[in-house]
Image 1: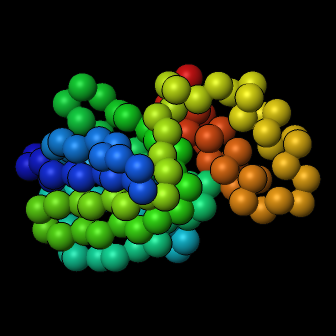
Image 2: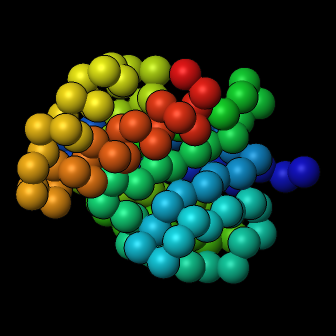
Image 3: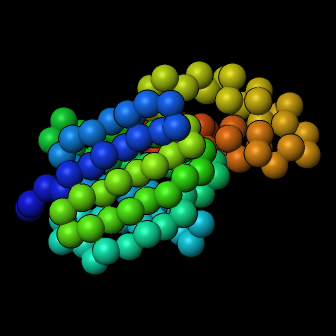
Amino acid sequence: MADIEVEFVTVERRFWSGSASMVVAKTTEGEIGIQSGHEPVLGELDAGGTVTVYTDEGKKVAAVQGGFLSVTATKVSILGESAEWSQDIDRSAAERALSEAGDDAAAIAAAQGRLRAVEKAGA
């Protein structure tokens, strides 16, 4: 199977770039899976969503706080407000942040996204 190039950037930095067999992202319309040759699409990333990148080394899961996804036949560009790899997330801190979020929708979404990333990674 052909790979697709991935460029994953946040407001602060280049988060990750490389080649992947598939990218799965949670958008405001639901999850989308992208492989090489995918039809062009532009999507809005869900606040508190996740992005999973499947590489030859395995899958990499990130919690993403909003942004956009742009797809061409040969490239996926992910433009996130912020992102964090699942292995860098402290599960108990994310659970605590969720319980302390109260009515703050942004804080709830961020904590839920971090917990989803940990669960998807199987950590």
